[in-house]
Length: 279
Image 1 (cartoon, rainbow, N blue to C red):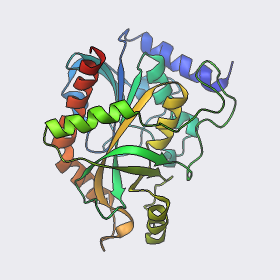
Image 2: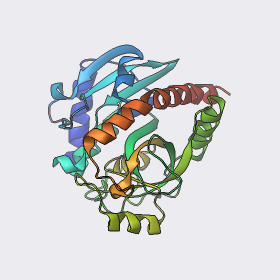
Image 3: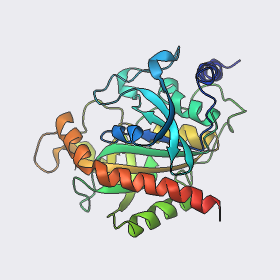
Image 4: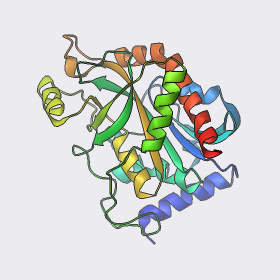
């Protein structure tokens, strides 16, 4: 058996020993959104550290557990704290949680993150819906033997962020009077922030915001046939382009201030997924 497939199956087996909950939506919480997992109707939780072979986040503020429960009537699995490539994990481990959540039953992956703004139309505190991405600066999570049961060897990424889910997010934001920008997200390896010259390069390539996660998770999810959507919280202007040096504390502070609107948009949108499904 493929080693990566075996690892995913082993993690799923261990989770199934603790819960038989079947989610419809998988939600990965970025910086500033971790508390959302404590505010839903919780049916159970599994710490990453209790799953043999599962990567554990080393970043402050990322709690490190799966939370199972309901947002409205929608059964969800929430990844409260993600792992990043810059923590030293293999890329297959970075996307392992995504593959596990799909194997548990989730058909939609809702990605969130904190990002640096590149476009001049973005400001710290803005929410940006992802319309496309650039992942050329990080290794593809699909490198290595393909698992045919998950997806094709050469999957298309032409609609990596589902058009219908984007429409629902857009309509929900308008209904809730939540300002929402849209744009292209670029993932870098981190953990260093991008240089001013790199920011100018990303802008020339068509990127509107930059971060250290998300794109590879989207690729792994699409490979497995999941529908994907995502929202970034713009916590700073990338590369110190506003004249101020960057810090993790600044990112966390802005993410925390924006969290109430962010949480409202995410929860209201997931509720609309169910309403749209029942039409």
